Image 1 (spheres, rainbow, N blue to C red):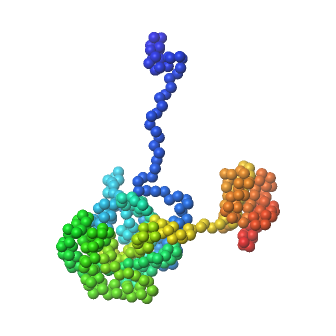
Image 2 (spheres, rainbow, N blue to C red):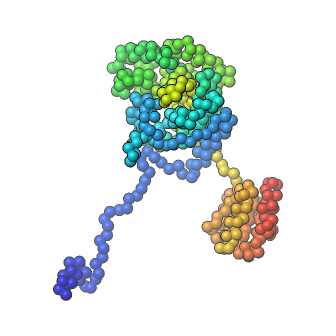
Length: 453
């Protein structure tokens, strides 16, 4: 007994006959947020994204491009070899990690190396040329998050593999501009350049390095490092001090070999033929090592930033297929950031995609009516009739208000009595007239009325 009292005293339960209360936890529950650089695309935003996806799919179909879905995770070396080990994407921005099995992998930072890997892996070399592919999906770069930029972002891309003719360059530019047109994004400008090939670029690089070494003290720290690793990328620097140096640098188009010069001239003639305006930018380069000859970017005047915003770009990558294990295979492509397109649509007040208005609203009252409504809903949907409903609501007035908000011209009402009789009250929202129709005839009757709308 003494032992029991001692135990009670120690626990604090012996005082005034009260039982011991558990101590309150001092720690608060973790409130989860999105990971830094990631975000949710909420339902109210989706109409803009839906419009972009629909535009891409329509234009792809018009130009004969087939969709390919690529994995989010690839072997890291695919991007290091494809994009270039000294590019910003690989050196600073790539999400890389090792799997439990020890595989050295990365989240894809862009789509072109993956598309070429798929082209080789699945034997597409035997298909008629060019092989035309497009993709849509998220990409990942460990970039510094800032306004309008995220570590997870969305792109679509088009790749034409197996043809070296400059007419493909012109057509893929035309295709990109067509997407802008379908999305009603205005004031888009095209900047274009040729950076040469493996025959003429080495001599240009020597000339560029010689010039830049004399201006080394005027370059930013990043460009001083690029001078040793990748001098062509200095032409892409946005630092003001470097921009002043770049203005006096030798121009790539003045040092092209005859083949590259002819290819570029032919491309410009094609663009003139289809009346595509362009700006020759002799210092335009792309941030990836696999580009050769044609490079281009699309810009739009941004009211918010009072400057040009890049929407996307691309060019020719005639050596990438061989670099990743294939034979010599020319190719051209481009990619665009969907986030930036959506931002421009909003800035230019482009109407978002509006889903089709439901032709019928299905209202119900009571448990049996709900069950019968499921059957009617299924039959109408199978007949190709757009139907809206709110099965969780039991109030008829609130359901009719929702039907009115959705502008559904026909409302079908099933109450307890109708459920037992297997009938439906069909209400014409324009005239307010109502009539009772059997389950067996309702689909036929609705079809007839929908045709008259």
